[in-house]
Structure formats: C-alpha cells, structure tokens
View 1: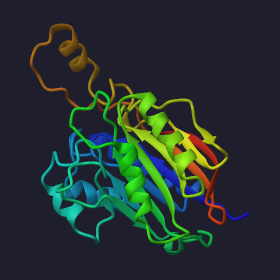
View 2: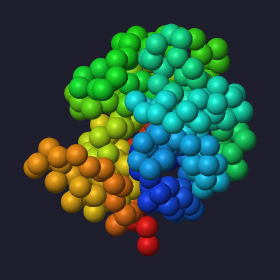
View 3: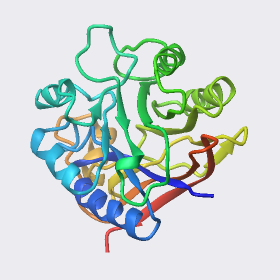
View 4: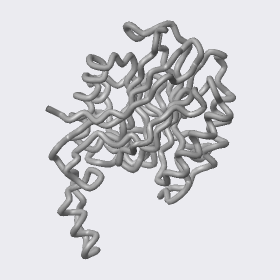
Length: 275
C-alpha cells in the first residue's frame, strides 16, 4: 500500500522556532519520508504574528503550507500574504465573514516528489471558542461548511483545531470522525505549545492528537523566558516577555495516509531537538 506521509509542525515561536522548524522539516523528509510539510507560523515574528521575511524563511526551510491562528492579523504584512492566492498560507475559517484572507490551503500531492497518486489535500484551521482571546464563529459549523463546499470527490482534509481547551479540540476531532469519515484524514490541535501524549486514530480513519506542541525553545514557559514569566506571574509587574533561546526543538505530528481509501493509517508525535 502506497502511503502519503504528512508532517504537521506546531506553532513556530520566534527565531529559535524558525531554526527548529528548518531542522525538523529536513528530518521529517529525510528520516521519516514526509512528502508534505505543514506548519503553524502565527508566532514566528518575535513570538507573535507572521512577517513577509519570516514567511520567505519558512517556505525556504521546507513548508508546503502555513497556517495561522488567533494572532493571524497581529502583523499587517500577513494580510497581503493571506489575500494572495500564490502564497499557501491561510487564516482560521471561522472568523467574521468579512475577514481578509484564505480560509484553507489546497495542496496537490502529485506535485511532491515521491508521493503516491492522490486527490488534493486541503488544510483547514478553526479557532476554538472556550477561553480564547478573540471571538469566533462555531468551529463545528465552519468545518461542515468548508468541507461541504470542496468540489473534488476524492479530496482529503486535515483540520487544525487551534484552541485552548483540550475537550473542545477532542470534540472537533470526534465530530470529524463521525460526520466526515474518509474525507477528514486528521485533526491536529495547536495553540497551547504543550505537546500531548494522546495521538490515536479515531474510528479507524481520522488521526487525532489534542496538541502537537511548538517549534521553539523548550527551556522556557511556552516559548518565553522563564525569568520574565515568573516575574510577571509573581509580581504582576510590567515588562516584556521575551522569547527564550535555549533547547530549541521542533514538535509536531507525522501522519501516514492511505490516499485510495482516504484514511489515516497511523499518527505519531514528533519531538526533534536541534543538534
């Protein structure tokens, strides 16, 4: 059985995260045989937002598609990228109807070296609504709306659940497994920067993991300097929370997909230290 191998990396945090992703993407392709590499890049500019220079660096490092979450409009340069069909970067699909940018990225696996015959792969992000800083529409309805509008009968979909609550991310995964079997091949959670240990295949078709973690410095508190975060949490005093620099790692998930049946055969987490 010819498998389509996809690596999906978690939120890139600042410069250390960009360097970690570049290393992780190379390892995913050379060691794990990844045909397609996807990454969330919403924190790649100094820990918040996506710049044009950052986009170019991430693409050169091996990203076939970039996704954004609740910080999608933090950097104005990202809006031009989101509005240009030539750039494979998307924002969450359940923002306001008039929000700028693409709601999904469409990838043609046939254009990737060594990939088996396959229908198109769509990458779709939805924001959670529990404990999130910005308002958004119903993520379940957004998933249903976007998938229903896909014209190709043989298309596969990866849903990124960018959310704070583990229960909400797991609920989105089960919703996709029960409503969209053999259409959605995986639901991966992002946003918390903390990788979870629950990677599994739901209903023998949808790979799922609550959170794939981050690409960034692991001697940190979710990517920020330990000293800065402790000072803020113990004194509530002002001051910047700088991006940390030590122990950079690329965390994500590796998916093995049967494109003929549009099922995920296996999902495992990745935690790749920068040597």
